[in-house]
Amino acid sequence: MIDAKIAQLKEKVRGGVAPALATPVLADGMTVNTAVLPDLINLLLDAGVSGLFVGGTTGEGVLLSDGERMRLHETAVSVANGRVPVILHTGANQLASTLALCRHAEAVGADAVAVVTPFFYGMHDAGLADYYHAIAAAIPNLPLMLYDIPQLAVNGISPGLMARLGKEIPSLLGIKSSRPDAQIVRQLIDAAAPHLLFLVGNESAALGMLALGADGLISGLSTAVPEPFVALTQAFFSGDMAEAQRQQRQINGLLAQLPNGARIGAIKQILTGRGVPMGTAVPPRPMPSDDVWLKIRPLLEES
Image 1 (cartoon, rainbow, N blue to C red):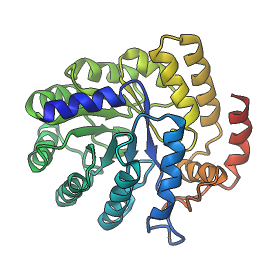
Image 2: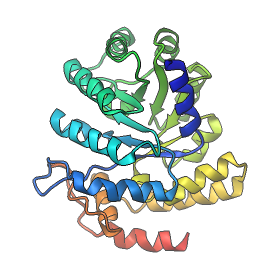
Image 3: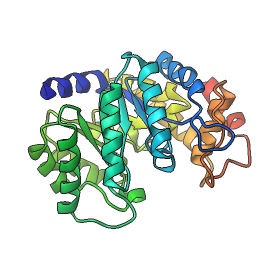
Image 4: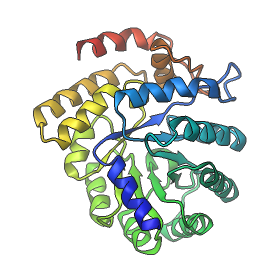
């Protein structure tokens, strides 16, 4: 049964982009504004995305309480209502929290969970393997995706660990790697079993990562401006390299407008400008000092 789930998910998600959903919050900056999620998710589905990645880095999941994460997850799955696969990020520094979030994800009907490596304290591959085995044992019938972002988490998924877990965990769906290093991404692709789903998050080199062999994208900026990411993946997988290159240039132009240190706030500001009131970044993360939407909007209109 789990093999069929993994195959179906890969078929649905491959060749597209699954936006890393930004999380709308109320004025306190810590309570999820679930009333806004239908507008956000419908905006993305209308743009043609192939899935949703909820509560990840752009979604500020690790900054929210477990209870708020569960509210976010349950609402996102309900609103999506099977129209596209929903992958819930359930990683936390405490194993007990990770397991509770994973079990809740299964109970509310998530298609898969993604789990970042434990962060802040460095760990070796053997410890990371034990961590993912404990998670898989708790939810053996729910596909599990590794989340590899060592530039933020300190720990990452090495090619050796990728190969090991692919052999040892039957429920392994694949990996989302946000590494900027193309050589390591290529090594991870080589280490991953062919049946696994390999998604990448490097937006400025998205086209190059697809050319290396990635199956698709999970992108934070695409939660606010999905159009060029959908167009890029469609062009690449249909063989239109000239159009894919044009869309990559468009994406890089948009990325250049995001201020250093306030990326998540800028993404929420863009969405608010597009009619989806997102609130602020979770404190103490800052909001941009300038209106990024005013800079982004003309670029979108030119595309």
